[in-house]
Image (cartoon, helix red, strand yellow):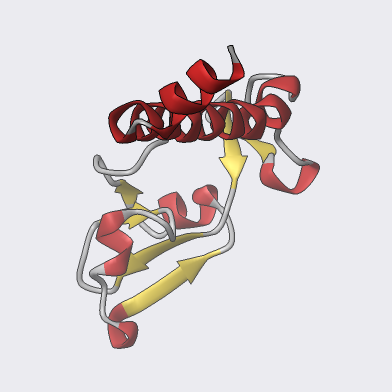
Amino acid sequence: MIEKLKSFLLDDAIFYALLVISVAMVAFLLGRNSMIDVQSQPAGVQISQTAVPALEQIDGQQTATVTVVASRSGTKYHLPTCPGAKQIKDSNLITFATISEAKAAGYGPAANCDW
């Protein structure tokens, strides 16, 4: 019986097939093990207190108090992370501490920013 098992395992085709299957199983188990920590964390977005802006009243509506930027030659204000804000040259950049300051200066919200 032991001789049959030795001859069976010494066959190259069977040996390489078992080797490939073993490597595949180890890779699968390692990948699965790496995802256990990720799945144990609660789903959803965690927001820190610093990420939530304060609110201000403008014309009876609550508006977020965030820093916005605008161009001296433009008519729209942008969040600093908006694509339009990144295109403004430093020499033309105006910064407002709040949205109400930007509105008071005659600027309106840019359409390409996520408000």
